[in-house]
Amino acid sequence: MPIKYRAIHERVPWKRVGNHENLLGAIDGEKGAKNVLLGIGEYVQKLWADRGRPSCIFVWEDGKESGYVFRINPASAREVQEARVPVKLLQQYDKAKGCSQSEIEGHFLTLSPPSSVAVLVDDPESASLLEAMEGFIHEATVLSRGRNAALRNAALTKSNGTCEACSVMFSTMLGGMGLRVLHVHHREQLALRDVPGVTRLEDLAIVCANCHALIHVDPKHALSVEQLRKLLAAASRDA
Image (tube, rainbow, N blue to C red; front, side, top):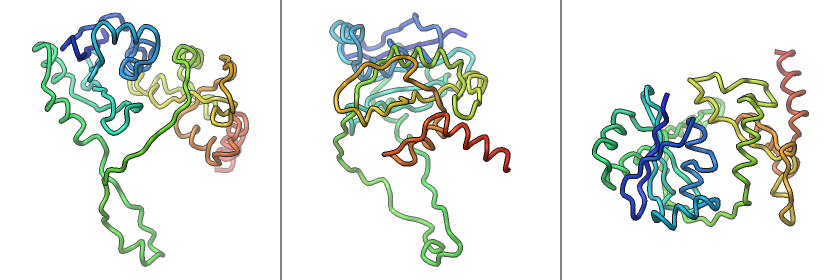
């Protein structure tokens, strides 16, 4: 199905882009929505110079019920927010060649799902905690290490949509949308590098979000992909 990509820039209120062949590339690719919003790459910098900074990007696939809207988090200039939007509504925006700022804001009002509390029945204090005040705004400064988008995309392509730890093929789930749960894992933690260094394709592994979290349960001593694979296999045999 054709991929639709629409961007709102400072000097171009509704830009239609038609060079994305798949949804993953339109969102996470070198010229995808996230890189464009974050200003990553020489191509994107030229894009900013020509059209101005983007404030919002819409991506959807014809024939699907929902698509995506992306923007920079107002509270963090280095974080991209995303929200699901009915494709019918995106098609209305496209027909009108634009949408209002209030409409954009509306898509992010319910961005986070309602919080839930796990009650421990043998803990009197926990058992009585059925609600709590949440959602207070805190200011934070985040430092992140640069990653190469082209190398990341090459690793994702090589993986064929399969987690290297649990071996689940996510590319076949939900019409290909399962790919979005895959993460690029650095076998040598970037956080442990004192200085920037060369990363090769073989230095990367593709793992699902759950396996990635398990690998980094101990942030100072990450499991290797091979170690986690053996632990998962052993747990499966014992089940």
